[in-house]
Length: 114
Image (tube, rainbow, N blue to C red; front, side, top):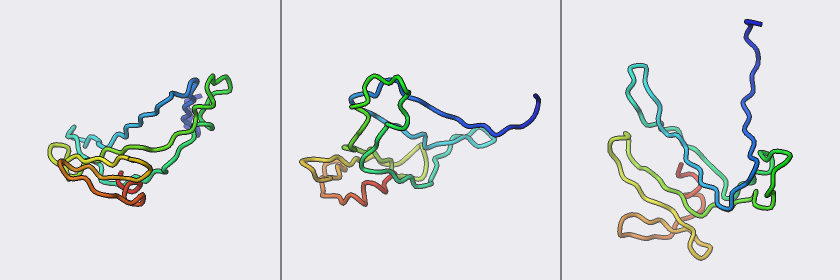
C-alpha cells in the first residue's frame, strides 16, 4: 500500500526454559559508527512470569514463572573500561560479590542496578 501504518512487534515463546537468562543490550552506535555505553537505568522485578508471552500451544506453562537469583553489573562510563561485580541470592538473602569482598545487599540495591 506504500503508506505508513501503525506496527506492533511481538514475541511469543513456544517452550519456557527451566532457567531463563536475559541479557540486555546496553550499548548503541553513534552515527559515526562508534559504540557507546547506554547510561539509562533499567529497573526489573524480583520475579517474572512469561505467561503472557507464551504461544497458545506452549508445552511447558508450569515453567513460565521465574525468580531472580543473580545479576551481573558493569560499573563504568564506557564499554572499554570499568569494573564488573555481581549480586547473587544466597540462602534467601542478597549478597554483593565484588572481587574478594562479599557484603549484604538490599533488594532495592539489586533491582535498581541495571
